[in-house]
Image (cartoon, rainbow, N blue to C red; front, side, top):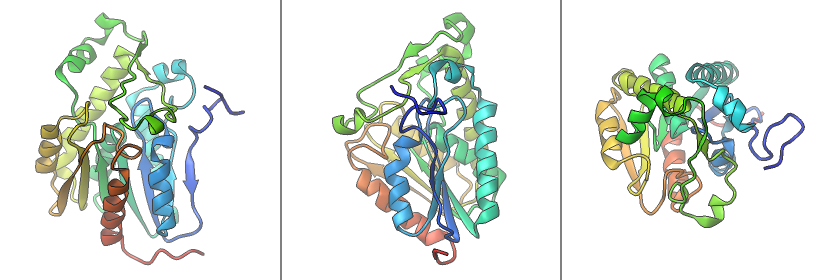
Length: 264
């Protein structure tokens, strides 16, 4: 990996596509990953007339030691600040998150019940049992000792897999932080009233189909929908079927975010 002048991995920096449009979309990336996984979606929404921002979360896109030192509260606080700032400068702001970013987005939507549209992309609101065992007793499994986590099934498209600039590593302590985010998100799902779209791959190696179905059922939203993607892994914004993801997200946001997207 190569680093820019501010010690951020090249290609991992915050995406900021803002040109004075009245409508915006805040995108949140996943655990150990970067806004790079949201670049194609961000570009698609921006071309459609939205201001788009995808911030780099604390500890991400830098060094593995910075990642190991980051915590749930850091990721959540940054997401809250980003949403507050974007809502201050736009008439209406939709919220979307991928994987852990989906869990963060769910928490923010429960805290801000006037969000006009929420999109959860393969939301990480639960984890496999073996990961829970490690997370619950992280100090017994090495604490902050980093382990490799790269799986070719997370991104099935080999051309996109090689572009990924995520760490491909985690520690038991970080897994514990991810678990806490998921638990928090799962608990607040009934408090979410924003129109909510869930997009999930049936062949996601990290999130089982029944998790997505339970998430849909738990949402307090009167208007909610679960869309299935075929042939993709976990990072559905860059994998096979991503064009369908973009269409679904754009249509959902268009249908629920009020006002015309006009460039100043």
